[in-house]
Length: 254
Image (cartoon, rainbow, N blue to C red; front, side, top):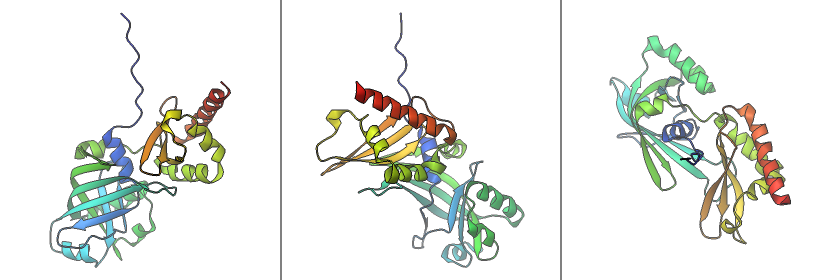
């Protein structure tokens, strides 16, 4: 008896998607009893520890003075890097307890933070900026109308998508300078899925392929144009995109 080959996986698991969203820069910090505010920066390190950088003497730093920890939620928003009618792609809630980083561990924590996100505010730690650790107890990923719970350990152990660091630049380049490539990617969408007034825009890029947004007069739909196989690093992106383009051109000739 023969078996059919398994369908290809077209997206990462929830933990990897959550880590990818967690790497975005737009975030709000909510602490019980305080108004929500924006931290100076945040990062989840390669070892899975989440840090938050806040102004020294600010509301959060002051509220934590003399306490072991504070209940907090870090909300990270993932927005498309090109203009869209609805640019919000996902949101991540990291709930847990904010705690001071012990002075003896501060240097190592700053270096781990910088390895993931080398922001200038790290130079002010100890003099204008305070580094806090978020001990994560709950992770919730929202994508569209769907919310998915991710175990804190799974979140810490996961790795962000390998194309996350180059995604924004590549999609902006595609949107601004290569309408012919976008048109070829659009041709991979089944004809029945496109209406006469639909507009197709680049939405996202990850190791599994491109995602396109079909903006309609009323509503929208997102579709994926997959690579032949998942990528493992940004260096493979050019060849994978070229293969998609060649496939689209050959299909048009047929």
